[in-house]
Length: 244
Image (tube, rainbow, N blue to C red; front, side, top):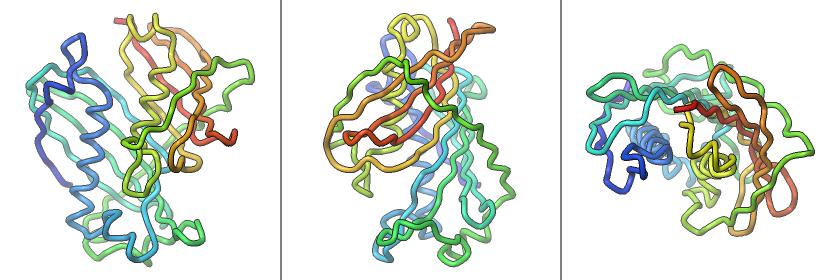
């Protein structure tokens, strides 16, 4: 298990005085990179070998959004599942208690062939030594119905990551931005379940197709589909919003 502390920057606080979700996602990504660096398993380590990590699933739950100058204590740990998926989990706390938790599932791919690789053939000794038993339970995400609202977004240069793909956190921001304004103003985003289907490369316009799923027990749920410039589906999400 790897542990580190983070302070929430002033730019990471929204109009309500609390941390924005993208800041949390950036912190989790930084933690994953720092831990992978210790094991010589970062994207930068792997690219010269013609391989890289690709995110397949993402599940994040938020207990509450901390206020400015809160100090976050973040822990992360990892483990292989079926020798194909590398599961990485996170827990986040501050001085007041639990803040959030997350589970992610990654695969190694051969960049030339675009095929997934067996973990035991390409991971380092430290990766194996520090592995933990992982369940990797991710829910199925339904297809978004044809009758769905659509909202366009443009891919910006700074949306791209080390692989020259749109960063995984950007997709979640797109999905969150696509809910009705009333939901965004009266609710907090407390859970996201995501499935990444294929990368979005370079510039261009994408569409977020959003459909209301249900509204019960004080929670509103939406289905989202990220569609690329050529009409191919890039990712699917379920967002869950709690009334404040």
